[in-house]
Image (cartoon, rainbow, N blue to C red; front, side, top):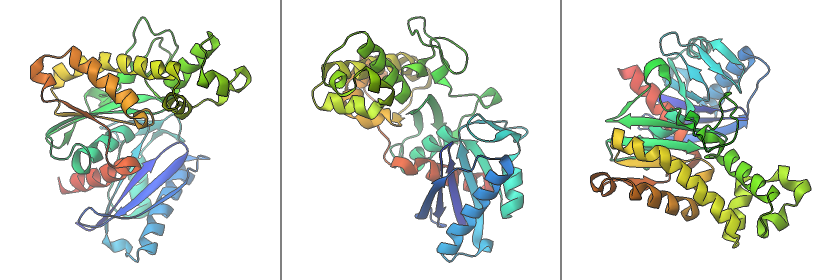
Length: 319
């Protein structure tokens, strides 16, 4: 196995990492995503791979695989990719990029690649059964058991953010009402905070974001207000943790994971989020689950998806 490349392709940025044969990350780059057309984006990805090889003085002949994680639907049978925030609509991304680079290419959902990376090199290392959840603009999950990534029928496994609850009042971008990700996500925390402030909640957050500034509010601002002593901001995180526990509790009973890794922007809030979450989950679980379950943040930071996509591509090549 030679050098390998992992890519995390998002609607805003492309992060690319070059790995040695031993799996060590040698260098990475970050650049704005070209979204003018599918062909131009594919050419950008190929160029980014070559640039890393040149900088590290590695010949293209020594590159064995390229792995890509992106936010979209990948048809496991046809290889066609459709991504709402990228210029891919039924595009055979892996095949076209293979033609441009000349090595095998693997494309998978970005959340699965993040969780797969954590399972091998991060917070899930040493465990056999890992459930991962990412909380960013939206919400999704992935399941790795004994080193195998579970895709499910149609490759749709893990979309827990689109479970609808009758007491969640918000419309989701998917067209359903009450989807979990409308409250359990970075954008969901902002939505909760904005509604609370509009309803008359007072405190630091209200002082910092009067009505004419509330569109600028971010989940980080809500966390900062809590850290500075704002009670309402703390309630937002506790409510978010409670809603997330609703889907994690049955997931634990169904899958019996060793560890649940919660990543994304919301997880960066730390104890204000993880403390209530662990409490709510533990209260409803049988002791046989509760006593062995670890709920933890990721340990690879923004590199999780790079490790995951690079390792996943290498594994697919071997198998």
